[in-house]
Length: 422
Image 1 (spheres, helix red, strand yellow):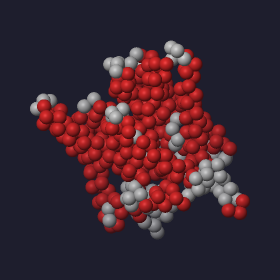
Image 2 (cartoon, rainbow, N blue to C red):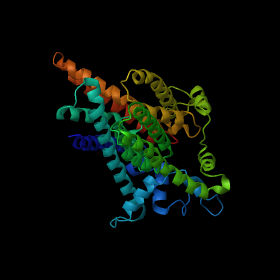
Image 3 (tube, helix red, strand yellow):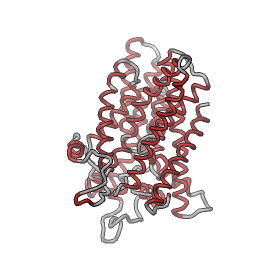
Image 4 (cartoon, helix red, strand yellow):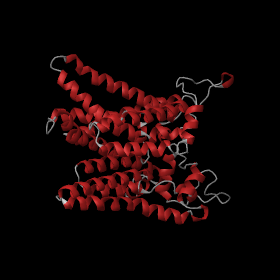
């Protein structure tokens, strides 16, 4: 039930998302392809076609510019190289067309896997914890999968899950890694984190989560002297998981040794470096927070608004969500396996400098992981009250539609209306 519902939910929501983006793009004279092929989408597809060199972006990669790899190595290879391998077998299309088509297929399939994994977490772990029952009925499993799929694919900036971006692939790997941790399948979790580590640097938080799981299992074994094999697998898993990150960083450091290695390239090309939140604080305290404002100084239309306001609010709200999540964590309603990577990602993002208007997409994982138990608990309470109040059945539909309307509006604002896109 869960995989089938995940497939249908993904197809419906992403079809609506694409339709909304197409209509919004046409109003600005942009095709759907032009809307989706912005910023990092270009980097992903160019790396897929050419590798980390052999192309130009702006002045980088030109005879008079810096080597392109001083910027391109910022993008981990998991997604673009998967697209490259799959696109190599496509003969009907050629060059960029094949790459873009395959990239979007990879993102769509990864989105299905993402919703499937969220559904399994909700059905197999969160629902029994809330209701005290061992298993959900097929109807309940389907409803839970639709709910968590809507949470993910209707979220603000969820448009990145249908773009040639690594977000869908990385998030799917992260979700399934957490699911394997909840199942105590540590070697599988380690392998998934290894693949995630080839996809995004953010996978370091997943390695941290594996390490904490190893400590927990060692403590359990020390107290009981039982299930020593679980402790051994848990200890090995972070070693497997970290290998992907280490391998890529070692290669990238060699390519960028002239400027100080991978992190120097991050800072040089993207102004990205950990500053303990100084840049985030400055942005929040100096940027306008009115998301309806479009008029700048002198009465002219300002293309940076409300994009800047959305970026600031995403940081404020996710920061508050992390603080509020402490209560369900300590009361046992939020598994630490969901809480730790979510808060760690938020900490990495909010504690770093960089392109601030990319924050709404970078903070998607904290939103998904921290709101997931809340969605399941709300549905459990609703189900218990339905016999006496059947009209409550319309509430989740209204909430889901409202969530998608807000989420799709944010995607349109940041990708179509915003002067600097994402």
